[in-house]
Image (cartoon, rainbow, N blue to C red; front, side, top):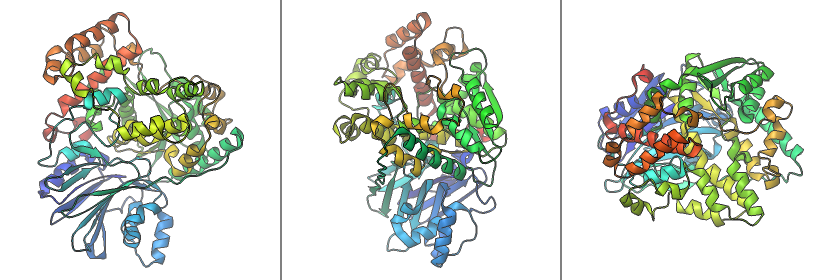
Length: 604
């Protein structure tokens, strides 16, 4: 696991590479390396997980004419190394990323079809008349890669994290003007656009190639279909259980200690149970000091006791949330409205403090198997002939569209009126594409919401503490049958995630298996109350002078929100205030991103 960065068809100083490296060193504190040539430069920060003494990057073969930097884990690297040795290649270590240069030499851009894991890769190929750059992402977007293409200069810069990308000299710090509306509509920007003007995210399952001086070309690699023809819930559950058992066992393999995150819900409890089958395991749960609604620690403890883990109960003080928020937002690089971000940041810091560099999580099960209430509501509405589309979109956001627009100044409301907050092509497929409504929603959630809203959060906030998060539910062998499930094996009769519940039967406590579903997040409605430090911090950050400076939010509308929350607190109002607070913290942090130092607590 690492961080990568670089530039192509650009002029940069050695200091630019050093700056980019320093700004994401938390994600790879064990080693660093870089290489430069005429018009190009690449670099890497390494978090040593496999072959702790090897793995020096950039990798190179063919006399340095192929150079590679790599971020992620390749789980089939032993198999690939054996095959490549048979083709005459030699290897100086057993690090997983070490197979990539030889694989590229054998298969060209098609090398990614042989990789099984999570990754972003950058290859500089100097064998032709002009240098060539290749960038590639994994099948679902577990490892993000940000880039900025300057069409005038025909130059490209890229990095694993946004602050590092903005650290390159000459990078624009402009903010995407329509970004606030897109953020409130989906809780974080969907698609390729970030909240920085001109800065994009390379989509999942995508390869970008560029020859020096030419325009980049991108190719999307389609997912392979897997049709099982399931006849019933027991058959589907058994298949998923055995595949998940194999994936968890495979993801536990590392040369460093591995832990599991146990939130107390079905997904993480199942991963915890399967991990414990392979030997002693440590589990981690986070909770909040005091008496708060939706406390899940007792469910997590029951799951840990059932699995026989060594359980770690992490507890943080809500009074310290304002101090955590700035560092959390900085590491994310752009706003994410889910209060869970704060918990995620603090939890992975505790995992690392306890001596673990790898942690398995239960993320992505809801997207794969149909676990969200908005999915159920849309499927039920469509099945009875009622409208579903508008309500589903509203459920994705911080607040419904009509309430969102009421917060804006007249000028900003007019500006965003004709700017879709979600990519138009994605909305077209969602509303009227092939398949049932639930199939279209599942494809949308996997292709757009999961990488933007969940995977980038997990990646950035785990790597902020030098922890590699591994995600069993994101593996190809799990996603493939999940995509193939008929609607009735996802959601039926008011039940969600039916196949996964069948897979978990007998492996997790009944109290966890049959508990009502609730989101793993902060109880922000109770916490954001007059008299608390968080309340005062929000009032200060969203004061009228700041709002007037931004020119997008109506100060009177925000004052009404605070008054409503003080008198009649509700989930939508509290989440709206939280989301706007996060956005203002982000706006303050990234006004001059190149000069923003890394948080001292993390750098240490």
